[in-house]
Length: 389
Image (cartoon, rainbow, N blue to C red; front, side, top):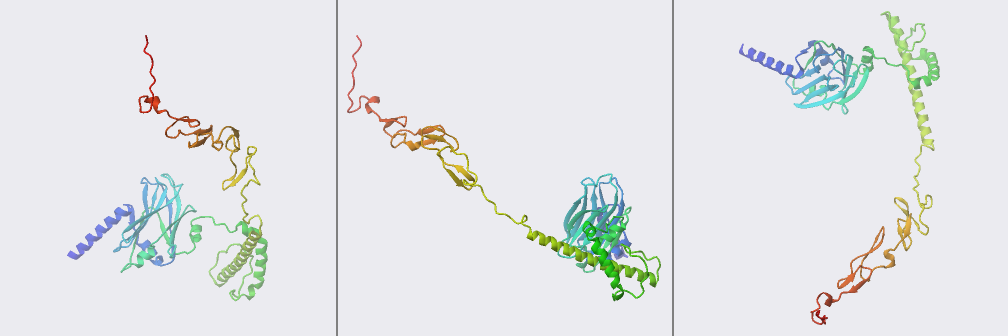
């Protein structure tokens, strides 16, 4: 009796923690749990929800999977304030959060259908989201639900979802089947198909001629016109089944011809691109003094540089950048006193200071007279002036 109470208490605590994680409105669905257990070991399965109406809560848990006894969880939520559909997982206790951005998801938006196509094949396992027949991309699944389930010593799981949202789990490999079931239009023909329709019709006639020799075709073939889609079986008997099989084989044979025609078209396009002169890369010719000479000042030579053609230095006696030159002195004319450094400036040559022991402006320098500032120094003859009368 005591053990039973402990089990009941532990179960209650676990359910309380799970309710806090998933939300109060997420309830355990035994039937959906069984559906997921049937497909969880497959390479792919699809979760679909319908008629998701606006709610007062901004964040809602749509679908959640718990693996009791393991640190694994999977949850699908919508966050209306941020316009996101969130995939939140716990993988060996480590939390991972990824999201899809859905521009049409707002507080008052009504979602007619939400489909999550799960691909569990490694490498590249992922989940793709469709809302109202529009794909919003995919998120990676480094640890899939199959990985979580198979890693358990005693594999088991529980599925929770919002009570007001009907949920279905399908083991279809082709998501188009589920999209079609949810009212999403699937076009039968593309532009390429229409372009080669005349080829397909010829192939169909040829296929019908060979139908009697095809070992896959049953002997009984009801006489009926060909349809582009697969007709429904209106009667469950041998004739109805054979009728559907025969038309299915016709469509398969036609699709083979169409694929072959598309392959031929791609090969023709590839050959055209390979032989196209305009598509080939051309050598880039850089400008030079020979092809694009700049307007240099008369007497100034053009010089080829990595940046392109440039004008050289102005002639002697001129200042400028080679394009425009004006008369002026340069250091090339040695305008400074011997030993004085010369600097070329935009306004002309500028001389530095005179050497030590000399004075002047740098262009003209003279030796300093030591007696000028100290007339009483040794060797200096003082100059006496008469006192005023």
